[in-house]
Length: 322
Image (cartoon, rainbow, N blue to C red; front, side):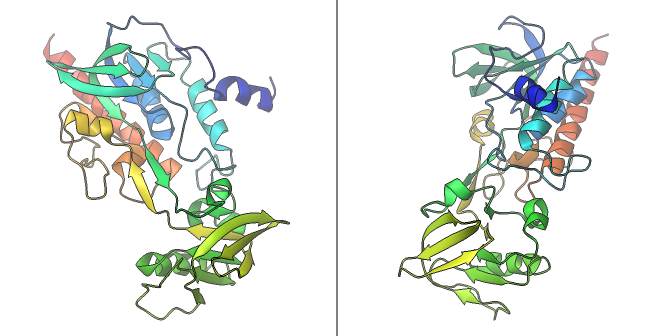
C-alpha cells in the first residue's frame, strides 16, 4: 500500500461506525471515554490501550489544524500533513483490542452514581468510569472577506508552527495592542519586511520599530503567488503571508460545564499538573486545558499524561476491590 492509499484508508472518517475495535453494546461499561480524537485524544487512547483499559474514543473528524497543509515543530513529524499524523495515530491503535474508535458527537455528559453517562447526537448512550475531555478549541476569525479561505496557509497564527516556511518573505501582522508588539518581535527574527495592520485605530502603547497601518481591512485574497490585502479606502498592499491574532479562541467546553468542571478565565478547563479537572474522574487535555501555547506535541503530551494518571486512578480502585 502506497502512502497516498494509506492516508485515504486510515485517515478518512467517512467510514461506518465504529471505525475499528471490538463492538461493545451501548450499555457496556467502559473504563474511560475519551471525547475528542485529535492529538490529545489519540495519545491518551494509546496509553490506555497499552494498559488494556476498555476505552472508547469519540471523534467528529474536525481537528483545529485541518485547514493547514502541514504541521510543524512536532518531533519526528515536522512538515507532515495533519491528516497523516492522525491517520498514523489511528492506525497505531489497532493492535490494542480494548480501544474502540467511534465517529460520534457526544452532546451530553453527566455523573450517574459511580460512573458517567454519555449521550451522542445519534441518540446512543454509553457509560464510563472516567472521562478524558480532549474536545479542543475553535478559532473565531475576524469578519474580513477572504480570510477564511486563506486561513492555515497564507494567513497563519503561530511563528513556531509556520514561521520558517514564510522566512524572508514580506509579512503583515494583523493584531493590535500588546498582541501586535509580541507577534512583531517574534516574527522580526524571521522576516525583515514586517508591517503591523491594526485593522482600525491602534491601541499599541509603545513606539514600534516597524510600520503601523491603522486602516480597516476590507478583503484578503490570493493574487499571483502573493496575497493582496485591500483596505476600506480602496488602497492595497501585497504580502507573502500574514500573521493573524484571531478574534477569539472558542474553547469547546460545553461538556465540561455540563459535568461541573471549573473553567479558567477565557474558557479553558481548569486542570492541575496531572490534568485532573475539579470533578473527580474527569480529566482534560490538549488545547482545551491550555489557555495558550497550542501545539500538536504539547497536546499529545497532555493526552499521555492524563491517560497515565487516569489509569493509575482506575488501577487503585480495582486493586482495592481484590
